[in-house]
Length: 317
Ligand code: UDP
Ligand code: MG
Image (spheres, rainbow, N blue to C red):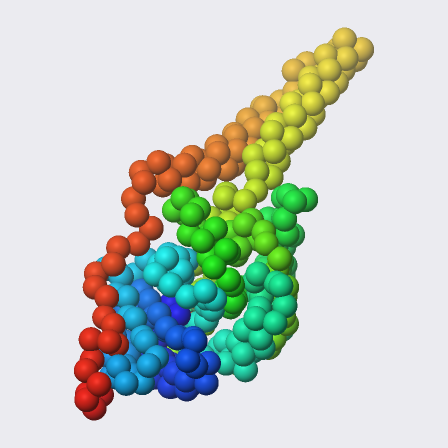
């Protein structure tokens, strides 16, 4: 569970997760809950440590403190990289990913030969029409390969087996757009629609700005459409300019008109400058991503790790 400034929400949700984990546990199976504190500035860690089960409870919680806020994608990666289980489930800390759905997903992975079950958020009643349209266009735009499908609205609420987790952890890229990476690694995936309840407490950490930033990471890491688009725009503008040049030559030869006025020239210059700036911007976006990758900085840094096993069986907390 990635968690950022969600102390109140996790206070309500973690006991639910713990009691579900209790039902999963038997003689052969142990269950571990990994919470990645993505640099929270509220009392999240204290809330989690207060809820830590004792060693006698047999369910293990590991709290991983990142050294600052890195964002949800690095926090998810940190969780995956620390997970040791044969099956790994990812869910939000705010309670928007219901345990009942998680139970269905686990059953599907255990009883069939699927490698990954992804929950699809069927409808978000609180989402504005604008956000819906933007998201739909994003998913249409990002789908650039016939070989794998980045399914719209299939988010980070997933259950996957070791094969998938190992494949995801082995991907070296630092700019992670997880929704694309799940699709890219492939494996036998099924989708399960669900309706997320609205957030009990706190508010979403994602606004239009941060979603746009995430969309840019997604597009630059999964699609070369923008690059192809700008070269096509280049061709079209060149062809149009050539035709216009021909028109001016013939107009002058046939009708003896003089060179067109400065308005035409000024409009032409501004038009081509605008297009060039847009094209440079698109290339710049890709160069920026390259720059981020070649620096090879780690995806996240762990400050400290707290295990529930550190709490003795007699502890009352
Ligand atoms: N989150 C995180 N780091 C961030 C932002 C969010 O770990 O920088 C966590 C957050 O605590 C929550 C999950 O990611 O558990 C989803 O965030 P949120 O509920 O704000 O997003 P939404 O449900 O609106 O997509
Ligand atoms: Mg949420």
